[in-house]
Image: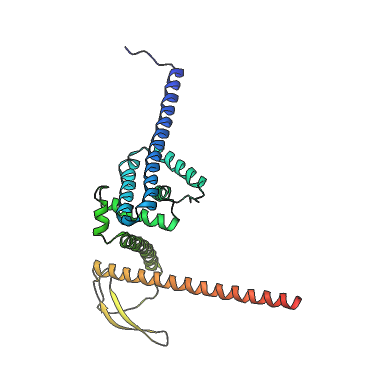
Length: 274
């Protein structure tokens, strides 16, 4: 028969467990920072004595960063990883590096090791992130960088990929908007038209706009299948994205002209007052 545990004993055990978790997080953070310190020292030696083999030295340093990030940092607990971010942020700030709240831990790793500017650090972080996404091991990373065309080529593809994802997200949002507008239009259609022989859940009409604002129906596709409807939705979404971009461009140009006119007016008033 088990002995009952008092509330005080239970509370003491919980406090001990919480304290142990914090200690583990601190030890985790300190251990990884010590590893990064060692890599940073190698980086300094590489920069001062090893430029003859610059690429080999750089690839080796990046592979070590990948090793720390992928095999150690990513296996830590959430509390431990948070403690490390805080530690790196404090050290970078103390070293005069401005750390943004949305900086990735990987970028912080690179900036801590290389002491580089934000653009350079972000580029190296792209390379390491690409290696992680391609499941490249730390040992294989130098050869992988070479076979991929070098750091600049990997960076270029990574940036291009990020831009493609952003465009795709914008297009998906536009497609959702178009779909919602079509659902609403079923209740309040743009127009009613009587046309013999057109059937199906959806039909496609080919119309030619006239200069008088009237539309001439020149063709009809009855029983438009799902793939046709999807293609049309995709084209409507692309048109929406393009239209919104042009609207924003015009708005920006108008704002710039307004600001310039206001500045000119203020300068003229100041000149007259003088």
